[in-house]
Image 1 (cartoon, rainbow, N blue to C red):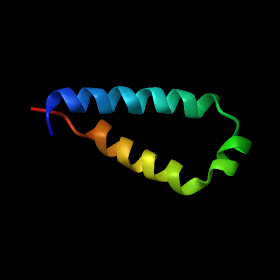
Image 2 (image 1 turned 90 degrees about the vertical axis):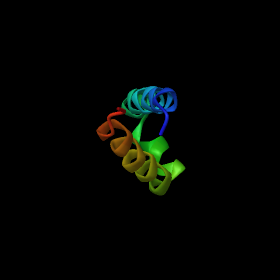
Image 3 (image 1 turned 60 degrees about the vertical axis):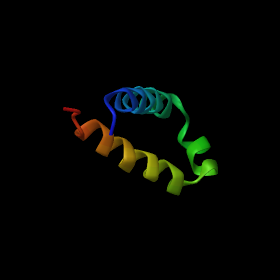
Length: 52
């Protein structure tokens, strides 16, 4: 993975987490849990990864 794309992904994950915390749980239920858990899993991998 390129460092530049890692930074972009990390920024996306950080902004997604902030948006997720603000959003109502009601909206998340309408959107479905599968997409949310996929992003959570993916973001946890991105956050754990350190380029170098």
